[in-house]
Figure 1 (cartoon, rainbow, N blue to C red):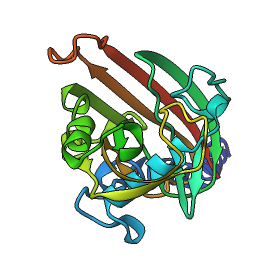
Figure 2: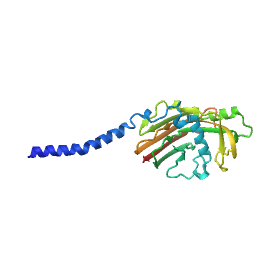
Figure 3: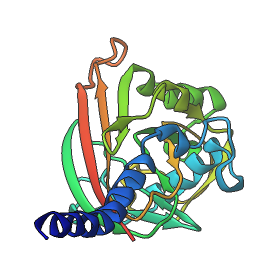
Figure 4: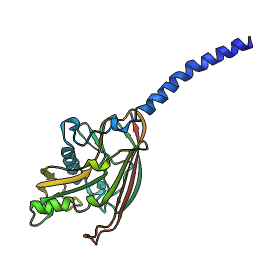
Length: 237
């Protein structure tokens, strides 16, 4: 009777533990291959190129109210700063030289844009703008930055492949007191960014982390080193 009882106990344990084991394995496998989640830089996620999504993000970001813009001295950090447009969730970008932030965010199961590093410039920022001034502007800092992006501890490989410059686009500025002092109106613009776009993550808890380190470019002696680590602890439902 004791052996029979042990066999019954083992069978019961297997019945209850196997589904849990299967769920655990499949949940891990769902994010084991990070390449399965990251759209290739030469692709068109949701019918837009990477450059077009960069332009979309830049317009959303420029038009944030001053106390909600990480580029503003009036910025009041919120519990979780997310921007949304159409079917996309945009994480934020930060412009302080030294920045360490952790956010706990609840988001729906949507694609996510990760603006790890951006530099947008427009005719609305200069007295006598021309195309060369804007071209020089968007490359004035980013080439000197080293960037790392991880999802659930797994690093996006070859992140430099995501250093993409948009085509020319029209930046519509409606926020009068924007921290970039861009004039109100519509301006010719470009943006250079490392901004990977990922497919919706499976329900559950996930971590997206960006690290940026930028030395002082010798041609820009007034700049200070930039070191920024932003961690998003996401609960996807």
